Length: 279
Length: 279
Image (cartoon, rainbow over all chains, first blue to last red; front, side, top):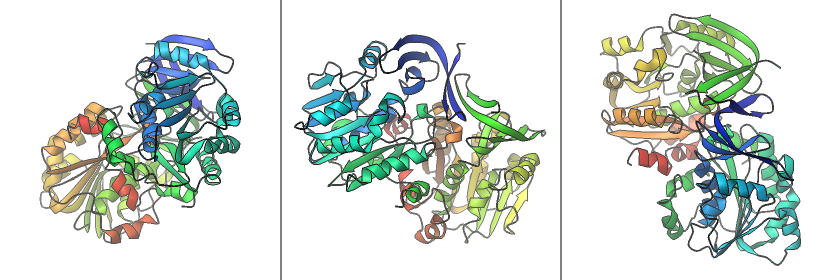
């Protein structure tokens, strides 16, 4: 058997994966990029020693980031994805036939290169003609491209440490909001309300200061080892529990997790989350 | 910092907790019993090197085992709990004022002794006069006590390995069903549909052969490290989505997770579970 690769949280809890083989290891200008092949989770993308996504459970993350927003926004013709270098998020976005153009902003080309080569089962939409992939800094893009407008913005950042930390700043959220069309929806991964309750609550506070409708939702991501993960649906109008049936019908059969009942269910919050958010 | 205590799944994935102190370690006739104090999860009960429950996340498990059954059964005067030596399940049962008597069958007195002493925050109902705690073999009890009848039966077994494996046998489920009053509800922990899909599916098959209403439901238990856990609601009549409002009102405020919306939400199954169960 191979060695263990452990991700450690605050030096008190760790998730370990048995490694069959290291398929790729490189250093970009931003971070260490690795793809490991594991016994339990299949191939796993690792950035700066943090597990990012795996073949085994990536659908639980990517479907949940994409579809609550994409089934509820008034229009979904133009979609912006920030981060998500493994390609899973744009793959889910581009399953919606109504999407005409998807701009993806990823700062680190090495992540996409490694993912294209070693995680081809995750990024299956790289060749979709609707995809416009740009290797630029999201902060700069959002600050300088004030004329670009999107119906949906998805933030698929890493964690609020390292190069991705700025993607959790209130000023960045404000910039993203400015790019939304009227009634547009932004959704983002917003960390775990269990192991990272402080970050979760602080993120919700920032979002509430900008959007009138801010709805966190929860689901499992085994690779993140915290029991439950969160994403957040944000808009100034509308609400997340009224998905358009036609859009759901178009994607449910091809989804591994997402369906109509699950869409409603994920927005039900346990008491400990409601109380932390004073809901 | 202390050492790591790791639980390993099939030698391919492990969850590790940093140990501050081992508070108790003993060997009963059935298993090794330990209570460790950890940095991330507080005090943790460990049986045969498997994490059973922790101060940090036990509410997520115990509330979910107890309340979907206890808010929906026609009557809840008499409740049987099998296993659950840490005391968390009977604590939740006895929060319902309608419960007049709760019989708890635990084979291993050492688990209860260690829990009483080192996990007093979990087992807070040991002195409730409605509790009838018996240290006997559940298999024998169910086979020989054919005149006893219960409105609700909760199975809080360990895992289908070691001394608790027989609690996952079809013949044992049949015996439990015989003890139910008309319209009675049985609920049980039924392993993870992710890391233990085979066991999950096989358990559902056994239950379906016995009950006309079998409804698995899902939620997070971080200590189990698999992303999502399952419990199953079983009965020959009725259905799990029509809880009695008065019973919910009596317990929601004192619950850390359980509430009316969550009750409905946990029964929504992702596609991969529905497909595995051919639903």
